Image (cartoon, rainbow, N blue to C red):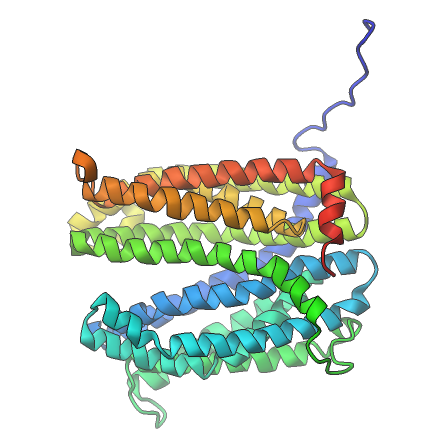
Amino acid sequence: MPAGHSQQPPRAPLLDGAFRREARTLLRLGGPMMATQMCIMGMGFIDTAMAGHYDAVDLAGVALGGSVLWPVFMLLTGMNMALTPMIAQLDGSGRRGESGALTRQGLWIAAAAALLAILLLGNARLLFDLAGVDAGAAAIAERYLDAVCWGLPASYLYVTLRYMSEGLGKTQPPMLIAVLALPLNALLNWMFIYGHFGAPALGGEGCGWATAAVWWAQLLIMLGVVRLPYFRATGLLDRLDPPTAAQVAAILRLGVPIGLTVFVEMMLFSVINFLVAEFGVVQLAAHSIAGNVNWATYVIPMSLGSAASIRIGYLIGSDDLAGARTVVRTAVTLSVGYALVVSALLIAARRLVAGIYTDDPAVIALAANLMLFIAVYQLLDDTQATMTGALRGFKDTRMPMVYSLLGWWLLALPLGVVLGLGSFGLPRLEVYGFWIGLTVGLAIVATLIGTRLHRTSSSDLRIRRLAAAGV
């Protein structure tokens, strides 16, 4: 070997034994999480379809209520999402018994968040009046949200316990609960929307009561699950602690950026929906189809990112930093491979996919064109979803929030408005302009998050510093 050169360790093959083992572990963890999310999506689809078959105004009211409910819901439940990597690190370091006390603090946060959500959603009428939406749809949306509020305390407590279960690597119980909730939701919708089994026919409002009842059922089942021996080892049920400032602050320090990251993205799509509505029914319908397809395909890489968060947290707790880096490499590779396959399928079958949602030729043609954007968008969105989840495993949540704010609200939305509305003498691209803006903004977000993940995962010092933060 020439003088002055040092021997470099050989690079591991992309599909080496460690990759395959970690891929199996991630899929074992992530598979139930994917199924859970699919069931949640299924409940949303059932709500929409059953309200739509009752009356078009009720469908509009449920959709309008959902556009307010879900951003608020995810903002506040996202704060406790920090529990998953925090508990995973405790479990990896042999401190599972401390995770119960941490979860109890999360339950206090959940209770406060539920009260705040009730206050916000209970005054949604002010937002509807400001937006000038149809009075009939607004009235149904208001009644729908009033009904949903009765279930919010149960839902926030359940989601907190779900995050604890997932942090311990037990992703199957939430999946089984979601599977049971899906037919229950359909049955209760049938009762409360159409007035069966002696229940009043409430239309769109009935979706809200069904949702609230399902949330209480999920909490009751989870309260039985946490009595199983594995969960009792956490000490969760040993006592009732008052809120502890240090632990609550530690959860919120990691969790608030997570909630805001999800919120700013969901609110962006809500705002764009209002703006695209000005272009007419065909463009709004095609845009809605494209967004729905994008969300359906996004569930898998998002769940893969959540699984990566659990694995990375556990391995950092075990002081296996090299193993954590293997998780990053494996998760991102799986996500890219998935995105390439889905993008190719969307390009090849874009008209067929659009035809699942409608038989209107104009909507199918426009939605098929938007699928081409989705095919490109997919590569970026799937990868950044997985990388963001991996960063949460390292407890690195603040900068992804900053990147989302910059990429979505300071780039994607303004660019979409300029191109969509044809400002500054540019051609008016309408719905295409907004999807161009989304794609460009996402490219920036994905690049920044990828760079951040590389810097964090490659630095032992940074990993240990982040791991030491908080509990």
